[in-house]
Length: 495
Image 1 (cartoon, one colour):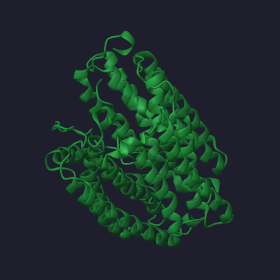
Image 2: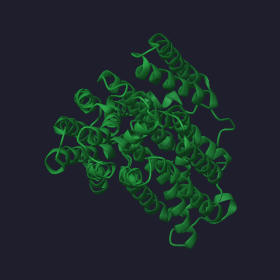
Image 3: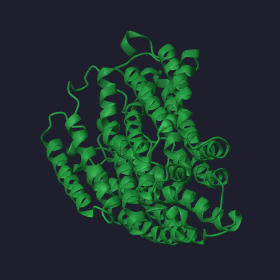
Image 4: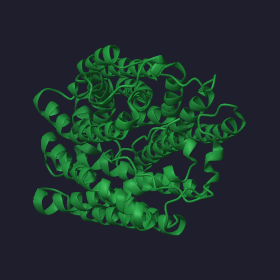
């Protein structure tokens, strides 16, 4: 019972309102993860920002979200899931307002970093309040609805962003979050009961989170800025980042309350699944970052048309991923975790056809469709393997770690690959130069996906089973897969 009150039925009025609050809350971060990319050319033109600033607009959000998402879950367990969820929503709304009013690219980047912290607070809580407050018989259905509807929010993000950019301004991509957040806070205050974990650790690993954030920021800065002016300074930023990464390992190893207990990586299958996650989600991050810009800058698509172009990816995931998860539970994940990245690699090579005057039906739809099929084949088995490879009592932690690893892979790849491909300065104002850089980035990302597929074949066992289990355990059905920015967070098992 949540704080002594009866658990909530999904069929009740309160149950439907509770699910609404959770879906709208996670939808805020889901939309924001995809809506911004379609607005990047307009942001760059409006603020006269170099391409590196556009990279930071995306990466600042991902950086703080990845660094603090595990802390967000710990805070929710200790101080109350509704309380931290509401704090996260309010924080997210305030940062969104600052984003929408930002007078310069630098202010926008700082505001995006604050937005990521808000997302890290509300994202774990949006699912935890369902797990903790909903009646056991209704949890699976409620979590399925949460995942599916949150995925729809992620899917419509580019379309919504394109409409707002076309009709009003790129600033409304952020400002629209404010009234939505107000609705979420009102619903949560009236209909979501407070719950907390009486056995939660008494301390929160702030040191680990801060050191991890410094590591990601330093390394990202060196990758983005290291070849431009002041490269020596940015090289030192990279040194600081690497030193902080080493310090993170030391802090987590010595901490009595680590946010990421390193012992969880003692499972070879868990480590292998996360290595594959890191590689393939890095490639995915580059695709979602650059493709929407390519369609607008090089192919001449408007923001709405560019947003619509990506809808087949998420539609295919929504339709096929549950079946892909069921298939993996019968035949094991290795085949799908191998073929999925290879299909995506083929899609990226087909994207080389997306150039000046690209036609949607012949040049854009085929690679986008193959890419969506590859994601649908791979993502559900990958998430299921990460969960099944950890002890049952650590399912929530395993899911959070896998989510953070995916975001970190995307973060570092989006920092490194465009710079490696020569996409820098005001290149988005030069279609021919951007097209050349896009081609290089697709080749690099396709190569990474091939490496990810080979790694999966060599390191993932054919059967799905927790290596720690002494007796065969029933297969865990993976949650519906909708998001492409990172694997969906899974709730911890019932206590």
